[in-house]
Length: 147
Image 1 (cartoon, rainbow, N blue to C red):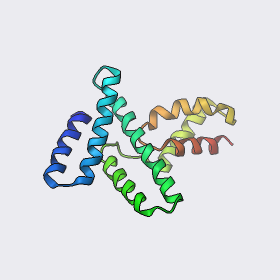
Image 2 (cartoon, rainbow, N blue to C red):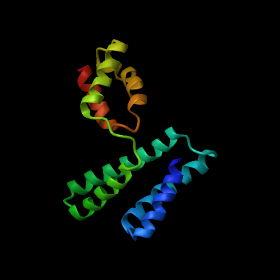
Image 3 (tube, rainbow, N blue to C red):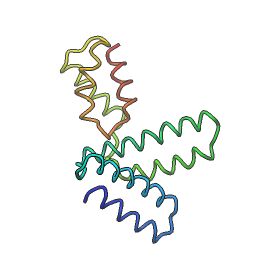
């Protein structure tokens, strides 16, 4: 089942359940996916769907950190609930230890020694963790491993 089919099914269920919060998030994501599909001119592959979902999650995480910094707990709570809904469509997230193991393996494989080699390591790590780990966490772990 493609992401759009899943979103349509979940949207119908949210309508039946009269769950306005979930319905709003699902509609927003569906709209983003369809816009991406139109701009690319073809049905999205699973990687492209994952990219769209990751972008949506990243935007919400950035908003969440801004709201928390501004002591706007009312808005932060809404963003957290949106993130919970979006998490349903993402693959299982890797733990920090799992990401660290992937980073360590990439460092050994590339024989990277300094921060100048970060691009080589990220080139190997990124495809393995795409959509399964936060990019900032990955970059921080790579920097730590190389310093």
